[in-house]
Length: 388
Ligand SMILES: Cc1ncc(COP(=O)(O)O)c(C=O)c1O
Image 1: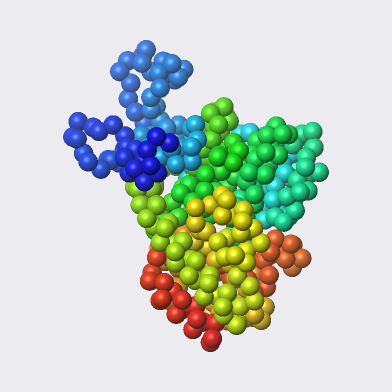
Image 2 (image 1 turned 90 degrees about the horizontal axis):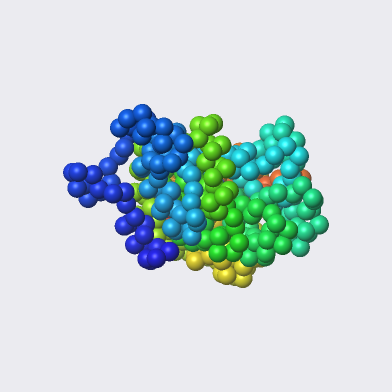
């Protein structure tokens, strides 16, 4: 990156139009026009680099992707309608029938469903390692293993994986190392520095940061992104120009928002850790976190998600949620508004208990996405709900 992160986020901008606008306009157009038949032919054969149709590229999505690439240190990228479209299209474009994935067991629920329900339809199998067993990764690698996949920190357990260690393993075994960097955002962690080939984001979360639009992006090595682009250009998971415009604007303030989210989250984590109705707290920048040293090595701050276990199991978790007054009960995260969820009785209730426990989702586990309200008000709400 040539300039500082903040400056690139604000000053990376499309060329100005004839109106010399200060802020970038919205190019809400599905297609673009050609000067003549030759211009059209050369554009379709990619002899000319230009916008043809917004399923392929659009100025607003290109600006958004360029910013993410600068922030992540990536060569190029492609933007998607959602984070899951980015995850699925990355696998679909890079894997062939018979290929094999090695993944951490703790991954976002829909990613887990891809591994267990959909990819097997195309004869693609996945082997898993527990987040605290990265030493077992090598033993899972087979001749047809093509992708090593992790998310860090994990959703919802807030575990941290050693990206440098995994990056080295991927290199040694010639695997494509794919990292879902959603919880950290490109401001807090840049996996490419540690050997990632592709970095994926759900931009729906802290990148938007205000709970407005869905979006996703995959960035990384140009040869791999080319495959992802060709797959997407033909199958249609593109990000809408409107959402790209919103998300590109959001990136201008990501560093300021993320700093405050993390400052609030650390205070919330410290408060919870000292509370006698809480069994344990998982926050990457708490010294008690099992991967605290790894988190310090690879993250700027600890992120905005705090996972903690309320004493008393499922009933206590549900009672805690029912007693919340200000914070929101919602499925999103990374919003200005603090959000609490109880995975065991909601998002992960269909998992068998032992599968849930295997990925660290204990009965009383609560996931708190710490927002930007005054931290004393957030803590006051959590405290009254714990004491209710
Ligand atoms: C880690 C992670 N990856 C991917 C996704 C999917 O993103 P989206 O909801 O934008 O499809 C989520 C959504 O919560 C997530 O938390």
